[in-house]
Image (cartoon, rainbow, N blue to C red; front, side):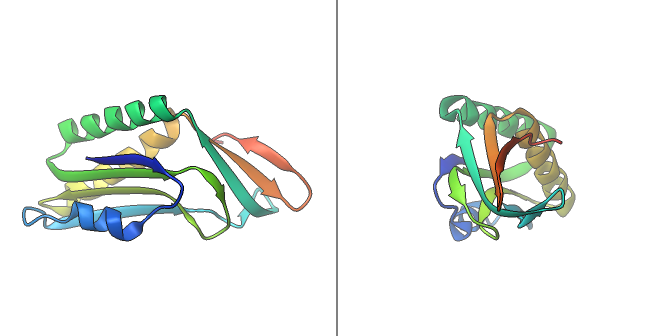
Length: 136
């Protein structure tokens, strides 16, 4: 498993990690910073994590995914720090023999990550900033 918190996400690293001759499907979800939220222009997001607990929870949901689907490899990488619009902030990747398992596991992992992993984001607008819930 490739699981980590980083300052900058390397999409090529995640994709290269997921490669395997056993895998007929590689599915990557890339979450990026949006330039708008709730009718306001977003100029930046700051991500903070409780690192040790975040990694432990990311490993937990990874093991859960491996128990539910016949996956070959799995990657969960989340960025921390200040990020501008358009910048990747999370990558979920899985490889499997067939696409159904790959799609389903990828969706499960990003949904569980947002629900259970202690990573917080603060949205900065032109006129103020607010901490936001991952699941509004």
